[in-house]
Image: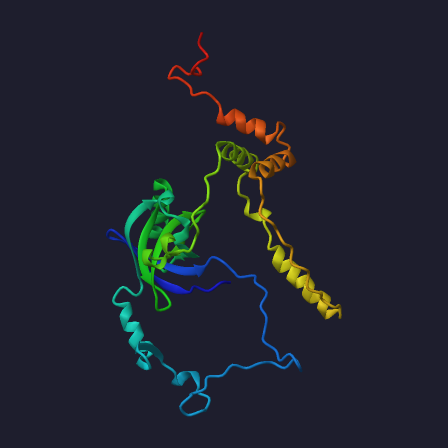
Length: 285
C-alpha cells in the first residue's frame, strides 16, 4: 500500500479540502550499482571533509550556497524550512484555466491526491466542480524544499496534481543554436506530409506501448550472466533524404495509400477554392 508523501489542505475560495499526496508513477528503469572492474567489488561513496581529511556522518552536514568565489552561506534544515512560510501545508488555488491553454512543456511530475481526515465531502465537491467545468485549478505549494506551480484536474475518480515549471525555467527558443532553414517546404510536400499524418493517425492507447529498451537491456544482462560474449553493434549511418517528396510517396505507398503521393499532393495543392455557395470557383458555366 503506497504511503502518502505529504499531508495538507487545498483552498479554493473559502472552501478547505484536507488531502494526502501520493505518487502517480513508478520508475521501471534498470538500476545498476557501481563495481570495481578488476575484481567486481562494490564501490562506496563517502562524505569526506577536505579540510580534516576524514569521513563525516550525515548528521554533521549542512547546505551551503556560494555567495562569492569560495565564500559560502550555510543553512541547516530547520533554517531552510523557515522559507516555507505559513502556507507550507497549503495548496491555494489562485484561478481555474482550460486544460488546452497549458502547453505540455510546463508539466513536470504527476501525483494523485486523496481525501485527508474528515475531508471526503469537500474532496468530492472539488472533484465534481473540476469535472463539470472541464478546467484545471492553478495554484502553488512547497514540497521537498522547493516551491511548485501546480495544476489540479479531475482524473477518473481522483484529483491529479501536476507540478509545473515556472516560465523562467524554460529555455527561450531564441537562445538555442538552431540554424535557419534554407528553404520552405513546397505545397506538394506539405500536402503529401498531411496525407501521411492522416494515414498514421489513431487514438492514443497507453497499453500499446512498452519499454523495448528495458526489455533488450534485461535480455542482454541474462545473456552476459550465461557467459555469452556481448559484441557492440556497428552504428548505423542514416543519410538525410535528398528528395523529400519521393520519401513521402514511398511512405504513403507502404501504408497502402492507393494513389501515389504525387497525385494526391497535386490534387490537394491545386484544388480550386470554393465559393460561398459551396461550388468550386470556375466550375459554373
